[in-house]
Image (cartoon, rainbow, N blue to C red; front, side, top):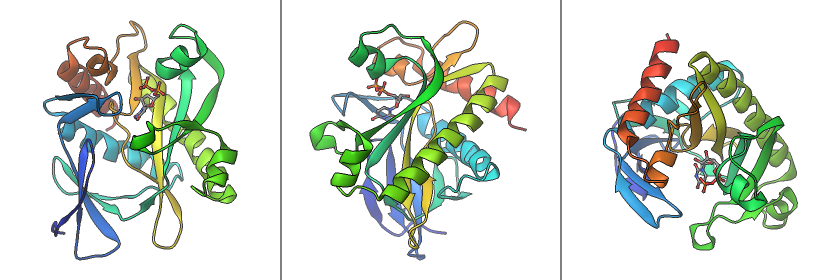
Length: 238
Ligand code: UDP
């Protein structure tokens, strides 16, 4: 399948049309942004890692009965996916306090929750992706009640798969962001990516950060962390 024309360019990926109206090609860039685009940089090799990691994790989701947009990996940075209409919600699952949760509620990072939490942000850069609840999402007609129920079920199921797999790799999944889309027949599928850009991943023993927080917080060792997390995935994903 060939790229026809670029139809979208986001912060970390470009999207191209193909001759099949129901399929598009995503092309992962090394560009990194944080704080709603205020901080910009490059993480060399990130596009390759995020593409390959996302695809392997998406395959695990399919195996667990969670439908995804994944079709076929085309190259190091390019993947063929189903064309979807993205539901404008960022769906965040947390197992441990960190990031904006710690900041909003005035708690330290690293508190292990008894049960995972879920929250939604309205995906809107101009508004800074404000936190909303399900009633707001319905009022704004971002998704139907049935779609929101389906999305919640899938999001917790994704967490179960990620927790189990990363634990085998000696990695704790602290929190992550998912996006869902509607295919041409209206089916809700998991879309976007699952990568160190969108997950907080800590070494289970040392709690060393192996994710984009190293970039956000100027901690150094960003490329090494992305390589290390990919190495661990490959070692355990035979
Ligand atoms: N996240 C993301 N994109 C966003 C916001 C958050 O992928 O626009 C991910 C982030 O990497 C983390 C989780 O969602 O794994 C929770 O992020 P949080 O709300 O703590 O926000 P942050 O502290 O990253 O601003």
